[in-house]
Amino acid sequence: MARGRRPGASDTRAAVLAAARTSFAEHGFRGTTIRAVAAAAGVDPALVHHFFGTKDDLFLAAMALPVDPREVIARVVEGPVEDAADRFLAAFLGVWEDPALQPALLAVARRMLEPGGDRLLAEGFLPVVVQPVGARLGLDRPEHRMTLVASQMIGLILLRYVLRVEPLASLPADVVRATCAPTLQRYLTGELPDA
Image (cartoon, rainbow, N blue to C red; front, side, top):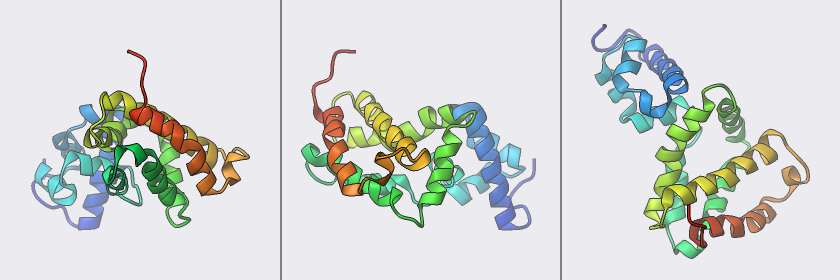
């Protein structure tokens, strides 16, 4: 295995990202290791850490998101839990309604529908980005609650942005926010049936 940097930092970075995308798609988040990604890219694992930091950071970079969702969602935990759904939707719609960001977000959403996308979502995006919000909000059963929130948000992404189903596709964002917030808030703080 090659040690250290390969010639051309941008080519090396691209090779690492390509290896990471393949590994996350084939093996899921848990089954992917920095060492395996480095080996597939022909670089030292230290170089992967140099470029991307943690495995979480590598996962998000491999998804090619135009924004770090952890930073966007961090706004959700600032304030009372009773208003968290409204803040969540405000942050979410603020990103998705941005015409500069939407093409890249659509590409990621479509990638989730391809083979291996289920593992990227279930083993990567949910535990790395979404479920920590529930823990930071101090919710009981955070994994359960945040998975319900994710189900609503994925449905919203598919119907509003990917499939563009009317009338949802053309509703003003503030109407979508006012309509969906009560459901999300129930998922966050409402009583849930015993599992």
